[in-house]
Image (cartoon, rainbow, N blue to C red):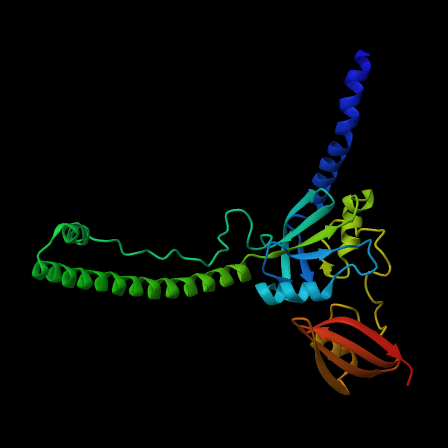
Amino acid sequence: MALTRWILPVLLLAPAVAAAQSEAALKNYFEGRPVTLKLAMPGTESGVDIYPADPKPLDYPHYAERLKQNGTAIRSGQQAMVTKIRVKGTHVEFQLDGGGYGTMGDDTSPTVAVPVAEKTMREKNLEAELKRETDPDRRRDIKEELDDLRDDREREDARNRAEVADAQEQKKENIRQRRLEGGSRFNVRFRDSLPASILTPAGLQGALAEYVTFEHVEGEPLLAGLPTTAAQPPGSGLPRKGMTTGEMEALLGAAVDSSERKEGRLTVISRSYRSGAGRIAAEFVEGVLIRYSITSE
């Protein structure tokens, strides 16, 4: 019985210990390393959500909406440093250049309080005197002075509102600039639980290989076991989701036709290209390829 009381807590603690050890291994391998982004990263701590086990790992319209709302902190083709790895529940945070603006301690509200002009002691005394005064001439004089004092307060309130409006615009600009300088992150998510493979450097690198180019560090072996479908083979001549319109044109040349339509609040640009594989119909949101199809000509 005593042995059972000791074994059970140890068994319950084992997964947490394993996760901590895996996090330590990921930290030791990735933190401080340079990587190059294959897609633009939004300037927010929400970052980009990747679901490696799903048929569609990246929700491109949702991704484009975050870019639109928060701006681009790290551009496609730009190098960034891995600044923190965190294993949390059913996802792994892969933080870049600070992890994104909006974490604890970051002020994300553009609101500035509007000070209200308080009644002066003179105004309060006159209001009290008016209640007691019975002489019509004196009451008229008191009311005129009260009107002047109230007009002064209203003018002060108007000045305060104008100054606050300017301050709020400045604060919005400051927040926008800080978002552009605060880095971003990938959240590698799973619906149920983290597989053991993702808690290894090779597994995490494989999950992000379509979106990140990992720089090899001199003296360390290249990681093995990466998915062969993580990126298009060299010379394939085929597009991949996440390409920009510029990358698409560099691969296939100028589009032969183009149109646009609305899907909710998003504008979807449809473009057609000719290639050796056939006619490629591609759709872009915010300049990012979200889907394409190929038909023979």
